[in-house]
Image (cartoon, rainbow, N blue to C red):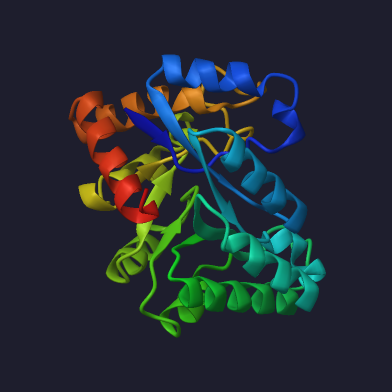
Length: 252
């Protein structure tokens, strides 16, 4: 069994064929899905999906791209959503200084408020980080203890080691299959087996051979195979360990 620990099935990309997407994933051995919110509306949609599909669990959060809209009303609504059934995390949240679609100050404030919510509700965090490694770590260290996963990991070896020192989980996507991603593949070898998780970040980051097409959870099987080659173990071992890790982290 495999788990896609980060996919955006609430996006319009899946509006017309979500049932078929789930069926294809299950045929590939991917039986559960974590759907994180990226906006307040997206979080509401993720909650609805979780209530309608036994295989889907949700996280609620506001992505740093939308931090400019994270006001007191949004914060209150997010807390209400977080109390619903099958909500297993807060996120995705964090800092994105690559695109800077929201101001840095608003990103920081939205991040801090969502960290506080996660601690209040005893939920783990799903972290988005782009070109903000030092600041992300500084903020998180100031709020320890907390459980967190750095999703779609693409950072430096130093950032990885510092995240692991904090006890955080590390989640990789299908971009590790890209020819130019050798440095990223090397970091996979540094992650302790009990801290590794797999995700597609669908509809984004389709694996090599499918680039330019919509990604979907069925590709976790291919991702597990890629990780097995990197680590020199069987794909069944990767599936067993990463599934165990996801269940431990998200508590379902």
